[in-house]
Image (cartoon, rainbow, N blue to C red):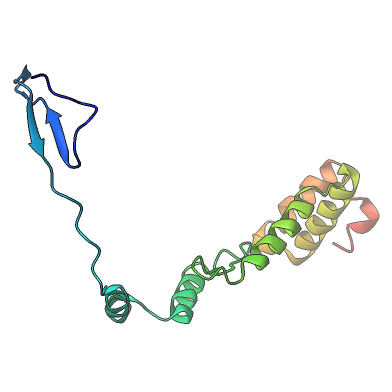
Amino acid sequence: MAPDFVNLTKYNVFLKLMIDGLSGRPFSAETLAPFPLPEKTNKEKIIKVSRERYASPRQIIEDKITEHLKSYTFLKFIFVSALTKQRIHKVMEEAKIIFEERNKSIKTSQLNQILLEEIKRMVSKNIYGYGDQVKDFLMQNEILEKDTQKDV
């Protein structure tokens, strides 16, 4: 009698093994039924023990991250809970602000004026010890006017 693939009962299979590249003869087998779900789980107990052993309070972790990355003053940190979705609205608000800031533009003439004022300020304070060299460069290229030489 030929095997009936359509009317196989639960957990019965027909299979053909390939060993070392050679196909064997097909045969039937019976698999194990799925294990029943336990009436009582230890999920809460496992989570509790895991937290006791490996977890640290949120504030300590946030403080460590902030301390480690404190030199990145241009970054804004928002600590969000993926589990409870706490503070997710703050991320969206900050993303909107960043989007708006990125779409701002400034005229080149305005930018040049701002940079020139900053250069003059730096030259007057002789920041980084290059004040005289920068002042000479500005005067040679007629960026720094002669009447402002005395102020700088």
